[in-house]
Image (cartoon, helix red, strand yellow):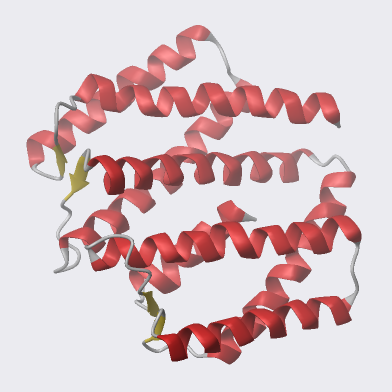
Length: 239
């Protein structure tokens, strides 16, 4: 659910600029707003979705949770912690009900042991790890920045490209973890990422900072692939 939330937020928040958070954790507005979005959409909402799905709560509970979160949103608006651009609170309620319904449906599909739902489950998990690690490195260590030239704000520009990159990259890593996990496949992933990041750096699309280099940066996806493989083994053993 957190991985799906990242995909949803990429469209409405980063690309379409639906709203802003003002949590005052970072000086940079886009990083500050993204931090608030992650806390809300990747932690709070998925946790409620998991609660609804695992406890098999009915539609009245779903409406209650949606109403509670809409009330919190209105409170944040009044406190200045949150700001709408084109987004409106009723939209939140509608999409929360949709998310709760997807969570219950997803749980049923997982119980049927379908291979395609396992693939998407792993894909969204890998997405969650990739995006979380990337945001952590960017916001706390200022490790790198992407410059595709899509938006005038450099932080939004970097977030937009990097998110898209990891959405695409996670497809390859998901197949690797599920179908072709060998020591040499990790080496191939390392070399492929090294070549891509080198091209990005030479073209000016990627800027590495504070002692980071291409080799070190390329090891991150390998670490994500290895951790995802271990997580997948644990899930398969428990199911």
